Image (cartoon, rainbow, N blue to C red):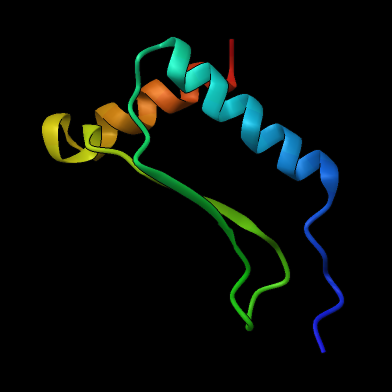
Length: 69
């Protein structure tokens, strides 16, 4: 049984990221927290058209800009 839970601060941090991206007009079509069975941590996955439109590097830079104000 998995004992590593997704805690409230991770959920709140994910929501703050999504809110910040929305303010920057960075469209997110879907988002979810995922913890693969073989991993010991959660990861937030985003689905964004910016990756196809501008490329992964440009999209990651914009996300990083929101993470590091």
